[in-house]
Image (cartoon, rainbow over the protein chains, first blue to last red):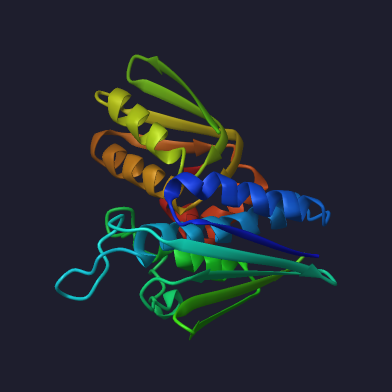
Length: 145
Length: 99
């Protein structure tokens, strides 16, 4: 099975993205626990794109959240017990996998939330890779279902 | 979708969550907590009907924990297996008192 979803990368469209993924996976008889792990990863990646991919850059070259928007494409492929999800956007080049993992042993007072989302993606999915090609960020992740 | 039920008895506050605590619904919970947390010395979250939590939801629970560290204590009750797994992976199982 192969499906494609395209939208403008805004937080308002998150529910549509999640709906697309859930519907596709339910037809694959994916169990609840795995469905949740996959949708979690989808939410984290999509929200990152919506907040940052098309943001204006500050003086240090870092994007300012929610200052711009643009197209996003999600390909979903399920075959032989594996689900592949590929996100593409034309925002500024950014590899989220380079983000340092948070220290999960710290206390509540010391914990910072930055980097938690992508860390959860790495823990939820079986494989994840990033490429920048033809002016596009391409993030692919795979999970066995 | 998220349903929030809150019940306050003196300094005890019980917050029951039903549905999904994600990017879209987390602001609702944050708003609710900020509105009712003053003067609370024990905050209990009942998560038996919480199906899903993302990093946005964890962020709100962490900020509630930080407030309660100053004015009392916080307890997280009855997370489902899936939600508990997320607490463990992210290290929040060591931060929250889970019962």
